Image 1 (spheres, rainbow, N blue to C red):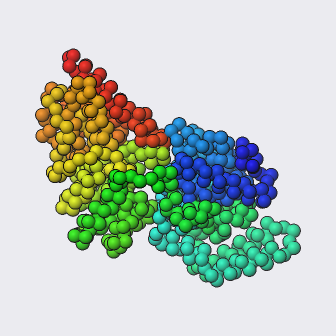
Image 2 (image 1 turned 135 degrees about the vertical axis):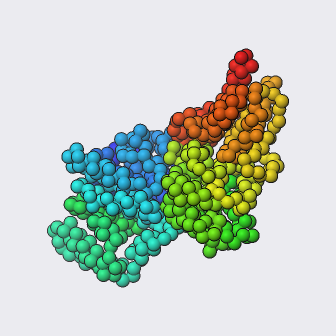
Image 3 (image 1 turned 180 degrees about the horizontal axis):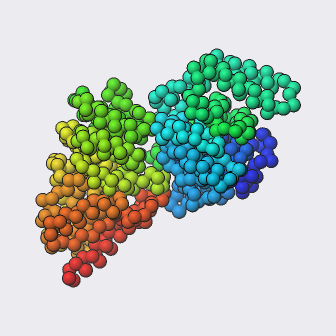
Length: 617
């Protein structure tokens, strides 16, 4: 076995093509075996194996800087850079990350987890290398899906200003998580499926390879220049070259010899290059090839049965229900149709659905336009990706007080994917925005009621809910703006205010344990985070108030409670339990709750100790 003996990427440089192809098979098998146990981004990593092998064969990492856009395709890179022995801990608590991490390895040039950032990072690194008179270069790998994000074009626009070249590898598999949408995807598809062009390319290759030319590199340069000339004629020009970037391709991204040849040519160019490689997501594993969306983020538990419906699925059903009775309802997503539960809706109401690609800012501002046009837009987005649309949320939606509903999936603690995918910031950055209302349901039934209630709400609204199917069972009280739901009443001095399904679940379990110790606690589902239930808060004189939230402490829900208590001179003690200014790694929800001191045992311990202090005063 070749893979076990690789301790440094330089170990592959003396391999011949046959050995490299064997190594590619071993890499795929190791990735497959690990992800089937641990879960992870399978299809994208399988599709990028040859690209990563060729990069390490041709370049000198870590002196040459490799930047992986999003980063979820980097598993082969990890295996080739001394992390084979650790690879079985992939995405586990305390193990290696499923994304590049600078504190994990010198071979990871940047932390990445969101889309469309790689070329911008490469522009900065290229300038740093130039300033330091370094002979090394940057090589970034960006998927065609990431080219639907505007940041990539801002970076391409800057490339002409660089005094040091960079190499950009465009990994074109016609997918992000779902199939790509928009003009960029259509252009790339035309480019690599042109029958006339591909016939020319095939014949040209045969001609060049048939020549007895001593300088093979010169022949290949001639071929690629000829190919580009034909592309200009057949395809109407090369947009990438308009950015001042040399274009090579498209080439077969699973042909190692071809990729290596073109990377060697690109190394010798004096200007920045973009190399367009066409790959198949899930390559080498037929099930993933046939269903790349399913195996994009694979979970080993995906085949298990679960009686509870997930929040994402419940949201999708609720959207179909309201759209059936209101022809002004319009659903929007940013390349997350399946992930947010909108697949069924998009098939039922294709005229009132839009997937804008990886362009969250555009999605939010477009929703503002839909609202101005008399429609009721719902933007389904992961919490960690809504961060990218913050300016649009403030400037285009909230300052105009428009009835846009942000349906925030994966809010709160998110397992496995690490810090870049945690939904622990949205409460904090949305609380301070004028005209914004924030709602956090305790379970999927309350989510459905909130969606139904939102149809007649004429202001900006954020409905935030976690991944999966956590939360408590029970009836849903009618929704009234700013009113909370008391789940467990008590005449005692302890009140637990919980915001969000996961925290309501933890609060109820903690109350049960406290009751066994003779301590009665009132538990409140604080479903409206903004505005808060001021009538309820005004009655808390003489109480110990413990607030629970699975997001950042500073400026969060607990801060809002504390502000109201202080401003209104209510004689209560407030203890805020939240994520106290720390970054959450990957791990299970249970592990991350314990790490954040938000697990049941920590809540019970805090309530007991603070209650003793409070009573003793």
